[in-house]
Image (cartoon, rainbow, N blue to C red; front, side, top):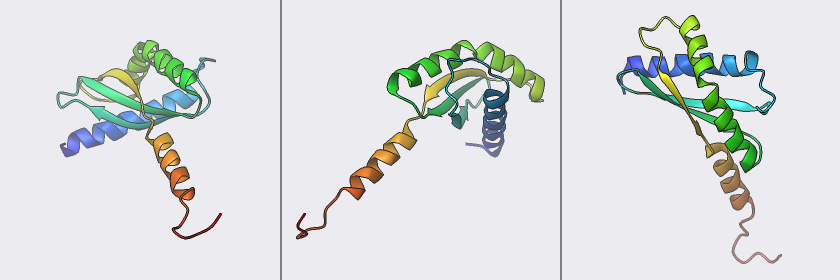
Length: 118
């Protein structure tokens, strides 16, 4: 990945985070929606947006659908905020790495040392 793409990834991530927290007034969106990472294609035309949502499975799936439907609005807002030749088409994906990490930590906490009686 080139330095330019890394910079665009971070720029889009920051602006989308700001838009989601300040401009999106959709009641179907939970309060804790975090943009964890952005992967812009090498031609800068498409972007995969990974979001983390701290709710149950159904609400996470609903959140992704709501964000996908709002992608046109978010694209227009990014166009106003960023001075890039191409504003990428946004595609939202669920990032469950935080949940997986939490689950692994819980499993580690529940490991009993050998020979220890409980």
